[in-house]
Image (cartoon, rainbow, N blue to C red; front, side):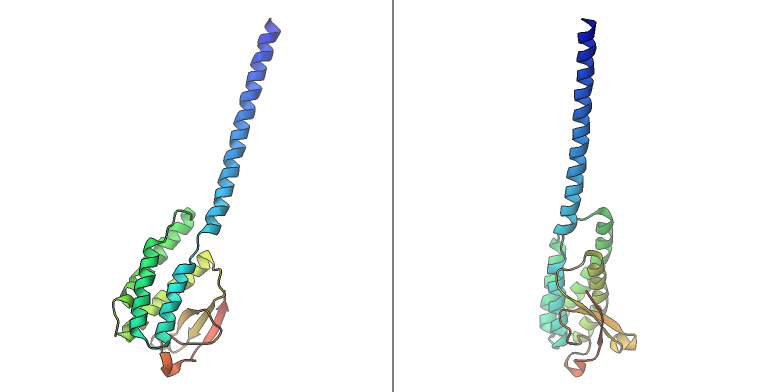
Length: 183
């Protein structure tokens, strides 16, 4: 009788121990799986698309189209879900996006004032570069640089083509600049 009790207790401990181990393994598997999904399912592609619309509009000296694209970028950034981003990335994204939203808003609300839009595009381009560095992109992009932009301080912009189309000077100096980096 004593042996049966000891065997029963030992068996119960073994079963409980195995269940605990399986639960821990399940938790680890779920956490590691969700982390992979988290990092691969967040994309800034739509943000980049709206940014490129601003860049192309400014390169074509089209202040109204740049304003529309600025509004579209602001709307896209406002509705971007951050549920699938790590805490570190979330903090960095929020810092960058707050600044980018401000510049997109200025570009969007200043149709007809292309010089003002271009001033804000300088900072917006830095923000986009930071976002691409943080999250990557599925699209081949280029970091271009114009040494004469921003009152001869120089400024970068992101482009989807190797061909230089300068958004800071538009048609007046369409090819001023060079590729600094490929994403």
